[in-house]
Image 1: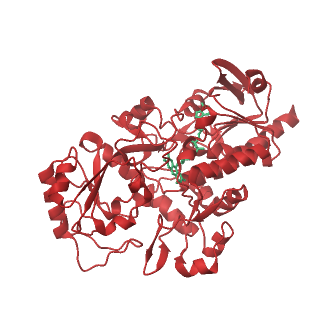
Image 2 (image 1 turned 180 degrees about the vertical axis):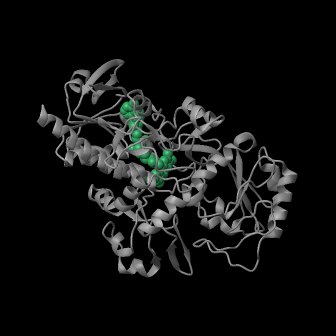
Length: 504
Ligand SMILES: Cc1cc2nc3c(=O)[nH]c(=O)nc-3n(C[C@H](O)[C@H](O)[C@H](O)COP(=O)(O)OP(=O)(O)OC[C@H]3O[C@@H](n4cnc5c(N)ncnc54)[C@H](O)[C@@H]3O)c2cc1C
């Protein structure tokens, strides 16, 4: 696309970014009658933002298999072997409130939870395929899979297939996407946002529009902003996803007086292979993550455990335990397992690019754990093994209460002694996913100014929205929140642009 074409496009709705939230916003604006244009900072080959890297976990409320059957095919035969349970709106609310220590914005959370099932259906209607998340969110125990709440369905093929379907849909709607075209400044005239200045081929291009949707991610890829807002050391974290989420949308919005909102010193981060590249690798996706620590031990450089690995299912703790690694000496940890749980580990433990140690004795393993005090590690394992309850059966599908007693940090579920060789361990550091701080938006996804008034013509969706997450995050809500607020932003922006056009 050349500069002239873009500057002459004059869409009703201009969408900044081309990830999940942006595409849902663009499709929704089109559904609501708007002429839409998307501009995207990345080149075509790196398109898709963080959304591309996702494994496709998709959180929504459901009252049982009948709700799920409206979204994907589940046969009666499947139901004999799979207990989907329920994930009611109340359960979803409980998770959001508990994980954010009751700080999640009640209005935004209400929209997230109550629109989630309907939005899952809408996303499926756009051509996105889903399937039961067996092996990730449900294990087979006594011949039957049992889901432990939430995340019953995952997107087939994860982020790449989600995006492929949404790009197809955007193309059907004839929505042009201009790659290599970052927005650098919002245009505000008479109080209203009337477009952006973008960069194309090193030139500044003015793109005027009836309304603008910012869906260009948070600031996780920007080390200066990470150090500034998340704190010292965070500049050194690896980035799990795109290198393009530099916080430009936030910076542009703050420059026109938008209100910062939410947990600006907080982020989503996970255990990530210590040798992973500085940013995500499109060919690996999310597979540098290591999420099965509830079945093993987390060991730091001092050879000590530093958290309760079994405090909850990984989907409740993984997004905050990544940050705990940052606080350990040397910013690394080892995840240690014995062979009793090998079959429970997800595919990410079996990729070729994994930093792994293996041994037949704990002493032999200790010598292989780079950076770890070996004697202290052996002592930690001995003390841990002695403290495990033997009278409670291990069950990965429930919080089994198989715990330790008397340790400085007890493991409160899934506390199997490490006693069955071979032992295997995985070297991890902190991988940052996205940052929690963002813009204040209304229930219609309109961006608020510093004093709570709407900035006319400006909408936001996805990671750039603040106020949903504090301290922690329930897995699978990122894509869902992006879809929900993207849809809302598209609808609101289309309506605003129409009103302005009619008034002109
Ligand atoms: C490895 C990994 C695994 C994940 N797994 C899951 C999962 O299974 N389920 C889940 O729900 N969530 C998951 N997430 C989180 C999820 O990816 C995000 O919450 C969600 O994709 C964010 O969508 P978005 O559209 O807001 O941002 P993005 O998808 O990041 O899109 C933002 C886009 O804006 C573009 N952009 C940035 N600046 C500019 C600019 N100035 N001008 C124009 N364009 C710009 C970027 O290039 C990018 O394409 C995962 C994230 C990662 C990194």
